[in-house]
Amino acid sequence: MEVYLIRHTSPAIDKGICYGQSDIPVAESFMEEAARLKLHLPAGFNRIYSSPLKRCSELAALLSSNSSIVTDHRLKELNFGTWEGKRWDEIAGEELDVWMKDFVNVPAPGGENFEMLFNRTKQFYEELSRLDFKQVGIVCHAGVVRAFLALVLEMPLRNAFKIPVSYASVTKLNLNKETCYCSLEYLNRV
Image 1 (tube, one colour):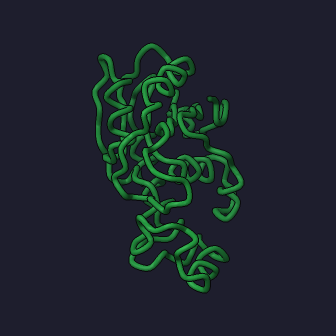
Image 2 (image 1 turned 90 degrees about the horizontal axis):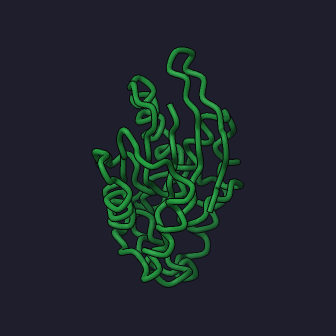
């Protein structure tokens, strides 16, 4: 199975704002970014999965053509709890420092840690690996793409954030259903 991990296009939000699971609309550059993105995708998918957040669901609808779209909450970005919508430089320094030193295990206040996001992504991946599709598109967020890569490459979760994941990028995995072996074909194509 060819699995295309598709990060959403640029959101309509100022830089420097924490917006994990906030439902931010797409930026004015949406159609232009989507057109470039399509150059790296097959003509159609057997199925498209999408985070329910607007910045993903709108892109999934545009890419769907004849494909069915399944919305899955496990594909949402990291939940930053009480930090959602705040400027990063407005978050209490000590609180942010504790999280930055161990974001894998320490959740944002009222939110989740990266291990929680990884576990929901892993659950989704395990279900996907039992399906019989040729090509699947997954429209999601940078954190979810990194969780997929940490799972497939068997890397420590702490290292996942060393992987670049640009807006409107595609990362392709090849999943062999018989052997359950999954490999990375390419990363972060824009």
